[in-house]
Length: 592
Image (cartoon, rainbow, N blue to C red; front, side, top):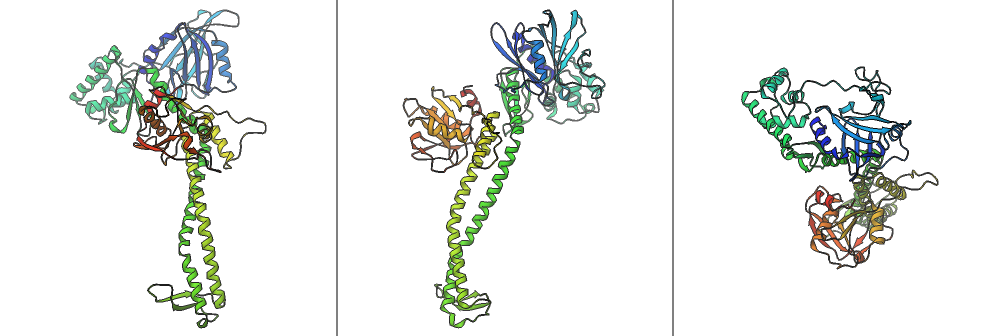
């Protein structure tokens, strides 16, 4: 997965409307990420520049990203130098992975100076560098960078304030839009011992490994042998495929494609259709390069950010679930052992019936079993230290103990089952958390229930919960989905009207979902009910399943038992529909 030079050139074209706009705001949303708010005459844009090793990219974003309360020093410098500046150009050196924003800004003396913000998208060497060109000089001087590189870190190209800025050396490689077959053959011959896909990446400027792998798959079905072993027929098919992609680029007939794993995780992307993964990967098409990058990386970044912040919470919940499961399993085993308690009472009765034939010191007694329909002789173990009567009383005590244990164990097992269901619901909500606020709410809920210690200090307010997720059906009905258990309770039991419709996956942990009727017919169109059911299934543990059962009923039929844990309710008069969650529909209906 990498943002290649050709894809970056397509992003550059889409950023053309930003030229002439002014830098209105600057945020450093993460340690290696900047967001520029750019205002033009026609619109406003948010340009995201990321320099992290695995997620480096540049694109316009529509995602709402939480900003740190205290801006870092680099962000303060960017605000000081770029604030109010006008973008006069966006350029790229061929298909190199460096995008430069030329900005005319006013310095402290009131003079207009030319600044360049260089976004270097080069894997672990990615960086965001602010460059100044004093007195019209053609040589740029580094003002600062989001990642400073000392000579000890890189003797070839250190990046420090005050140093001259130089572009990385550019190799002699072919352009996909204008290559000649004979030139390609010469380049591949120079890499005869390398695999064909690697040779292609080193021969062409700006292509990614997934693009090269697709070329090899078209050429010979995916046999990625040494470039020197390629036959003339294979080379002809290779150039045929590459020429077709070249024509697509020239005509801008592009198929922006993201590859998604069966678990829903974004894995890779390209500017053309990718087929060589077959059924191992799902594909998602986009209308533009920026749209693809925004969606692709927002999913990855959100997942990574949530995973990092909630790592301790995941561990705590997993431990709690395992511990509770073991406790319930042991209680079930004890309950199974109590099933033979009647035999204890029978042994006590038989000892009392046969006292005349038992002496203290015996270890067992054989007598007729009057309680069996078939009769027969039964052997009863005795404690030689006890009298016959004491042995009988011992069996009676064990019987009463087992009888009492059975009654208590049944209740404990029921409580344990409800506790497991609750913890499973919190874990499911944690996997679907979208913001830091969602995580804080779940952490607070677990602390409230006694599972965790509270982190908030005295006088510190708990993080404010975001409103429920909001959707609008194609029929115009508002559909609300709770983010966590406490919000589920509030949404269902306090905020909704009795004529609203409540939905929840059947025997599957998930969010409460409500169709707001607002005095309309309490029987909304069937399409709205099915869309709400698919949303309920999508925001549940059954997200990746098909034919998910979803119950629905009026809010007035939903009640919360006394002492029930957050999110736990009972309901009556429900109907059930079977749906398959639809992520694209959920995104389309969502109100942001």
